[in-house]
Length: 219
Image (cartoon, rainbow, N blue to C red; front, side, top):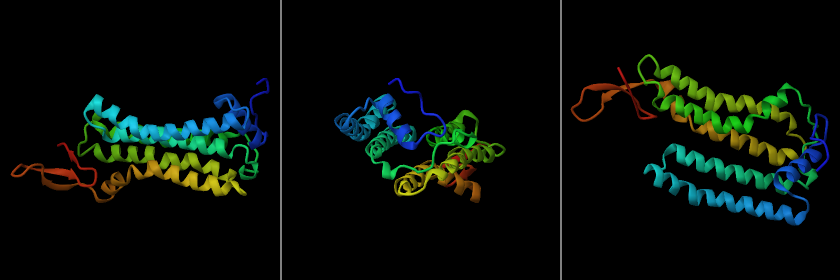
């Protein structure tokens, strides 16, 4: 516990041991197994508990509820994977930490994958009215936050995808980066196709409608 914090140039193995000890209290194989088991059970519990809690509070789960559920479940699953491969040094990246500006950007990758889509959803959720003059740049902001930002933050991490580490790191890097991107597929389709004209209700006046996100553009 008295060892200094990991510094640039230290091996991934030392960094892994430090994080496991400091944040998860792992000191031996038994405590590691217990922590992994707790994370896996927590990942399952997130799907059992979080949606009902959202429904009881808001009478619907909604996009925010499902996103929160995914966040807790995936975070715990990633933690379990990281702890499992902690002592398996043959799967660690052979590239040492550099601690430069690229590492500082990459350090926010997982944060960007979570909060990028969330902030983008807030932008288009009604804080600013969706009008003919605002909808396009609001959708572009959401696309940048949920798709472009996670990709930019992931790029610096690719230099550590080497050796056997690539077998684990590359699929995780691609899959997790794709999750926020998938949340704005309909947004990108609406930006590509633009609004259509259709009645809001049968017999009602025609209005501009974004078909893929099912949003009405105000006059």
